[in-house]
Image 1 (spheres, rainbow, N blue to C red):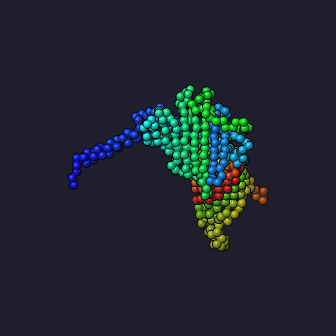
Image 2: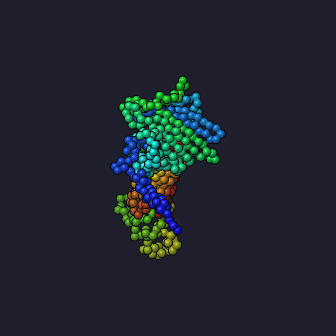
Image 3: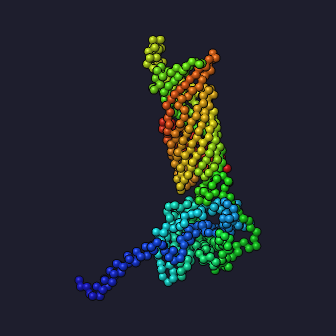
Length: 529
């Protein structure tokens, strides 16, 4: 094969281009030293936070919002004005102006939920939510620069966690920020398959910097076999700095009046009661807190085998005599079953601290055989007692009622859908029939995961620490008193599993099961307000 000089020149040029191409791409994708592309162009990455949530803007603002929903057969239109003012009242910094004549009860319900969700953000968010390592120049020609980016995958507040599924493009024209375009590369919650949001910015005429002046958003949501298309348009009407200075921008005069000559109402939604303390800041960080006060009834049943280590008794003022050598306590099988009905009142003092009071009643059943020792067995044989009766030993099957009361606390916290809790209870049980009082300390650490439909599944352990020496007295029929003292070896830890579900806003239900050497079942039904 003969290669011409012209072919050689072509191959050389092509090889030169191929060698230089990686250098060009590398120079585009490598961040400026000690900086990034946005800073180099005089733009703060804060505008990318604002593209994700307009409520992260400094100062206060009002914007017109028009929402259109199209399910393919009908189209619905809703108009409102959103006012954000962090100085208005703590926990009520978002208000909505709407037309009551064109607002149904269903619209009001949706509107309240929207305002409640709007409260859940933090103005103390991390400085920049963008992952600066993902900034990449896609275009730089004819006075237009296009920069692609992604948001951080970690350290994102719960309210903003959906932005981890968004990809953004920053469009800069003639050296000024024009708009930011967001699209999803993974499905979003509520079965949103496709989303595109375009956020437009303009420079402030007074202070410099950029203001979000308008946005356009299109969502495609799957509902059954239908696809509902939502279109949302916003226009900023007023903007004030944190020191209440009104700002202007070039296109401000062109913003239309939304409710001219129409009577309107204003909706405000409180962020919560005064309890728990620090609850409002926690809610504004995106954490969903339970209602602060709860009233619960619960049933608890548990069974365990008891291992007695000593048994002593005496009449009246006589010294107690040990029967450990008379009975084979280490071979005896005694089963204790406890059934408790309780009432619990609790309150969340802090977002992570709940305190409670408990009272109720229970029945303790002790059932089994205490085997006799070898010496007593020989003596009983001499007395003519049958071998079967000797091997059976001393049968016990008795019920003792108790009154119970106490208190405790719960420490709880969570990250995303994962949650941790540590429950502690101090209980006092008074057994009037045998004139005895017992105390118990119960620890239950658990880890849980919140499923999408609001059910929390939990797993952990429970430790019960109580008096191992039970003492009391029984009044005999002849007027004398039988004093007793029983020692036993406790069963401390067992595994726990459970589920929790809240429903109808105020009601809650929970079920826990203990497995292992101690088995238990707990059912809780409660109301929170």
